[in-house]
Length: 259
Ligand SMILES: [Fe+2]
Ligand SMILES: [Fe+2]
Image (tube, rainbow, N blue to C red):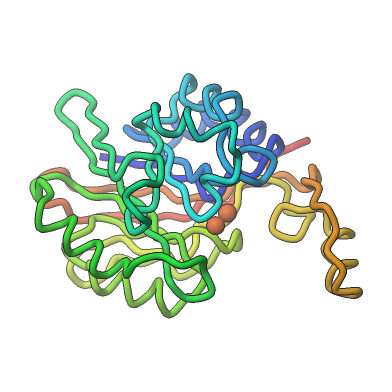
């Protein structure tokens, strides 16, 4: 099976860039499943029905997330009701969103989960122990895609090794900066430290760069505004053997989009 995954889709520029090229990417890779990290869909912060529905109605199968998932009060009810929104598993049980989502198409099935890291991140439970508890109760015959949403490269790398052979893929998100360390680990788990951001790259991780420069220069907080310059799609394509559950290919996607 072939999976396309796109890293943090940021605001309207990210949504527009992704949807403009998604049909041809699906055709190019002959992909079966499309997964998107959507924690920044609504102007950089959170998910709302208005910002997510166009993706779900146009070939996106499931949404992973991270620390920003619940930033929009008006989106919380929708997040609680839409099963295809997967929340970080290692947050308190009251947080809206699905713990996992199994996509089924024909004979193919894929289990999707998301966890957040603990280093330089908002407080959460251990992703390592949360994964163990999940895995003990999971259907271990299904391939498993993990979005590991974290800041620390060491924590991400360690988690990749920790679940090597259990997860079919561990793809990092959250930094919005794509790394070039894609590989298949020794027990068959496809690994990439960060898939990067889909959105405006003439920016500082999605926000107009002038605003962030001024914030760093003066230490005075300024209201963030989403950049719309330098649109780019960042993500990864994966091939997974549905029987062995092992990855057979990992290829980064880093594609400039004409504006
Ligand atoms: Fe993000
Ligand atoms: Fe994040």
